[in-house]
Image (tube, rainbow, N blue to C red):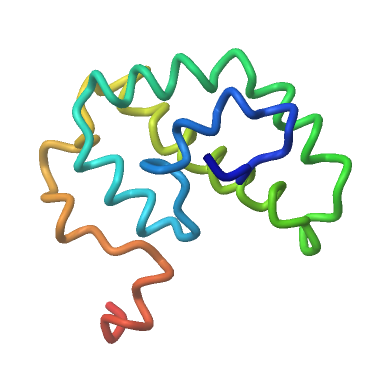
Length: 115
């Protein structure tokens, strides 16, 4: 196993293969392609560590994170993607009125031609 995260967060390394993605669009696709059991396992692993993650990341300037810390931040963003399905919607798809494949993440707007 490669060490993608800071040593203090080595217990979260098993989640990197699925959840560690550099963009919001990629993290969103992982969320909507996951089942609730996968979301719950990830959520339950990160939630008790989340305050420690934030404290750790707060030691570094946001625009100049070391690679392991950038990965930890991106994994945290994936955790945030998992919170609404787990805490509120009980479904990887967070809206029943709008198909997720039609939802454009802001970073995708330039590639799609905008609105």
